[in-house]
Length: 315
Image 1: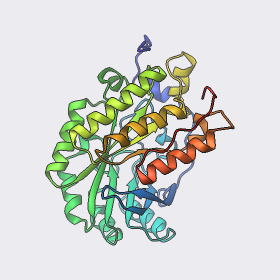
Image 2: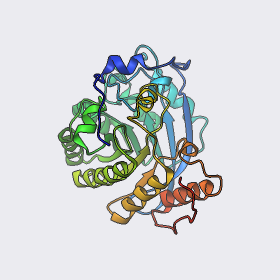
Image 3: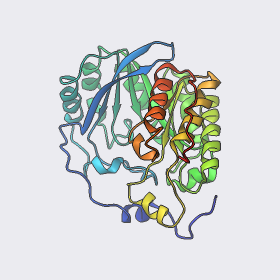
Image 4: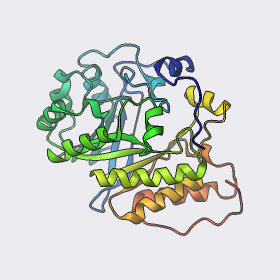
């Protein structure tokens, strides 16, 4: 595929494609739940995930739809701890917690540094705490948060794709070397990392999407991450819908996700997960969709390959 539009894809164009945001409360997380996850040591343990309400990330990535649940300005000191406390008081107990804030945890314009110790106190009973960050914000603040935490810290970083030209056109404003440097910095300071990888970002065909997702898993583990999460790119954020209308983007097929996850698991380099959020939109076959979804759930949980689903459907 690899054909690109003549117009410039930048913050202004991406914002011009958007609809309205959802109404959110700066003192309440917009979503939270507990699920099981396969751990690097092979155990299956409960993980609490909290989607914190926060300002929009300053990097308006082409594929991102997290802006829909963001505030127009930064939340004040104390708001993020209040959100975490609210969610934890309503969730069952778990061994691990993920704090995702629609941007970068270490962005001082998102999570006030003065809130770090209060946050650390709220999560001190967990075994690990996972946050997300753009490489540009990885640095001394990451080490400060690690030092005030009792649990082990893990940082999730969006590699997105190892295709350098596609990565540039995602408007993420990072290079592959930035990802490598961030992972190396965190690893050297005893902080584990995981990578977010996109399956079929814009400008790639289905076969190219599979190929580059596999290459991206290779790149991420080569850089030193301990786990990868593969995210099938979904429309609905405005910009992707505009590109779809110009034949620059199509969402991937669920069978492609199965192929990529199977490849990642076969490497035995670390857990490789499929993001199953909105998974129903990636297949139109009533005969096999539920079987494929169940297969992916089992692969996620057990990190094993299971027999392929036999169906003659195109997708």
